[in-house]
Length: 177
Image (cartoon, rainbow, N blue to C red; front, top):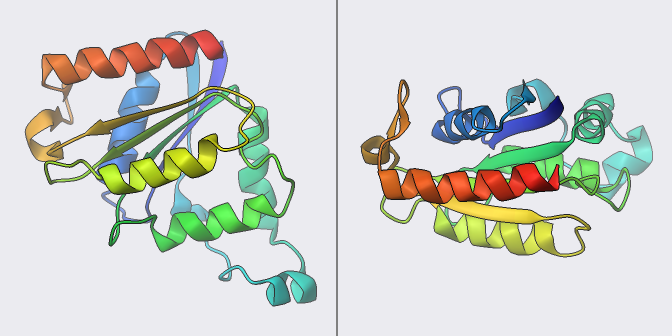
């Protein structure tokens, strides 16, 4: 059984991206899903001065250890003003100073969604470019537009074409595990 870490890259309690990440993780056959909540990893805003004075927070090490112990990672990105949420960016900054292999060379599926028709495409594109750069394993990307129209908490993705496209990404992700 493979171990998959999933999380929404948002600190919203009702994050639609967290719901999407959990749903996608559930599509991976024969997998244990570990859901991370960014609210459990609140740390000082990263700065070199804070790192030099206080070191790297234990929460950053705990987050990184969760990634290391996994076989694959699924992240769904919320888009705030066209970019990452501050909560995600701060964790990203802290774990990037632990070692250069930020995502531990794990296969990754990057997702995004939003209430609008673009499905947070800008942040997904940005995240894909940044995370895929130098990653030694497969990095896939998929966006779900108009979340309220295309997703139901009980049934998942409602649009058959979207579901088939996501399942293709899940299959590629699973093959890489």
